Each structure stands twice: as C-alpha cells, then as structure tokens.
Length: 353
Image 1: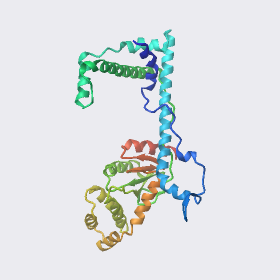
Image 2 (image 1 turned 120 degrees about the vertical axis):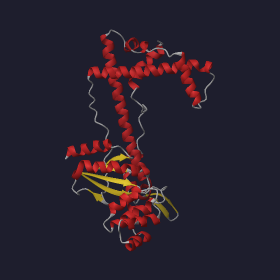
Image 3 (image 1 turned 90 degrees about the horizontal axis):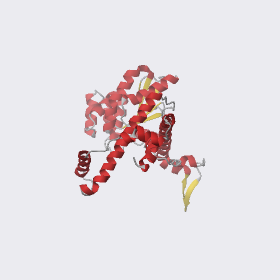
Image 4 (image 1 turned 180 degrees about the vertical axis):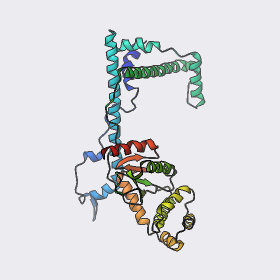
C-alpha cells in the first residue's frame, strides 16, 4: 500500500458521507446589510429615484431563497463534519488498542484487504466509458488509470462498510437535531379545507397547469385524510410564467368559488391539466352545474385576475421559486414530495401543541 494512499485513508473515511465543500459558504447579502429606510433613495438621476423599497421588491424572492440555501448548506456542512469526527475518533480508539497509528490500522484492517481489479473488470469499465461517448485514449494507454480508479472505488466502499461496522459496534447515537427549514410567515388567505382552528395549517402555492402540482394532489389528499381535523389546507395560486393557461384556470376556480364550488372546479382542473383553454373552462362550469351566465361573465371580465396576482406576489415574498410549494405552519416543503416528508413536519408540529 503506497504512502500516499495511507496518508489519505483517514480523510477518505471522514469524507464518505460528505458532499458539501469544506470552505464556509458566503454570508447571504441580507445578513450583511443594515436596516435602511424604505423611502431612502438608493439611486437617483434627474427627477427620478429608486428607493430601498423599490429594490427590495425586486430582490425579495431571490434573497429569501439565498438565505434558505445558506442555512441548509451550513447545516449539511456541520452534519458532514460530525460524521467525519465520529469516524476519526472511532478509528483512533481502535488503532490505539492495537498499538498502531490510525494509518497503519486502516491499512491492516481495510485497505490491504481490497483486492486488485481483474483484467476483465478494467476492460469492462473502459468499454462502458467508451460506449457512453466519453473521450478516452487507447485501452493500453488508459489501462493503468482505469485500474487505479477501480482500486480507489473499492477502497472507498470498503471504508464505508467498515465505518458502518464501527458505528454499529459502538452504538453511536447522533443527537444533532434534524434540519428544519426556517419558519416563514405566510398568510393563510384563500380557499381552505379543514377547521380554521386546526393546530397545523398547510399553505399550498400551486399551478393548475403544472404536472408536478397534479401529482402532488394525491399526497395532499392523503395528508388531509390521515390527520383529519388536525390539519387545515389553504390553497393559493402561483401560476408560472411559462404556463399560459394557468392564470385563467386559477380565475376559473375562484369564479366557481363565488357559486360555492371552488373545490369541485379545483379537482376538475387538476384532472384535465392538458385542457385548460377558455372554452374548456366554461365547459367544466357546465359540468358542475354552475350558472353559466354568471360564471362566464366573471371569467371574461378578469375580475379575479387581481386576486390571482396577489397570491402569486405573496408566494414571491415567501421565497417560492417553483411549484408546488407547501408551508407547514411556515416550514417549507418544496416540490412534489412523498407523504413521509409531510408526516415528519406535521408530527413535529403536533408534538408542540
């Protein structure tokens, strides 16, 4: 075993669960700024001026997302560092008991037991890389590099397995709290399902033309059925700019809501995501037995457009960058996540009540 390999063994062991960089992430811009009078100009020319409030309005969503990413990245770095520290100390204890240095111990117990790849394994990996279109030199020239790569891969796998073994033997208990996204205040304004006094409120920002939002409907229904009167769902519109039919579909749902059938139209729209043109929306109103004259007048006038836009703006202010986005008592779940993702947050919130 080479000295270079031995020198890197401990660092490799500590890094097997780490994907985050070791350098600290940059501070988000919002954290570095001092509070500024919203009316104060940040630029002026002639008789025009841009105020701090104008600037905040433009960058609020991106700053909120940057702050959230900063916090999550910092947590992942801390978690990875903890895994590395556990691995280092477990190995050091084993090495001390054996009267060896950690490097000598890992060489004897793990690295020296990793077998060299066979000629067939080397050729097979080379062929796969070539078939995948990767630029590779002739096999005879690349043989050594491919073999070394396979050895390093096997060493990494062996170290991971040994680390898991040491953790199990020592009965390691990780007490670092799980990652929790920052709690964001989001107004629960909009059509809702569930009691107003439910201990958990889920505010969903969604788009009737978004396929991922459609897929999330089954999970949302599962959450409501599982938790009953403990959960309230509030739906808010967040039509994406590349979904041309989404804004009008959202208006149609609110127009149906004026006649007491918001959720029936809501379900109809998600069941027909590829047919959301104006004529189709009016057809769904007929299917639901709505007063066609009132519904069509509501939809054609665009009277609900301001409401839809207000919902979208609220999503921007909350840091929504895609759909669906759910705020479970202010804790963000982004994307079409499985039931377990909701269960973890909902259960955590219920424990506090």
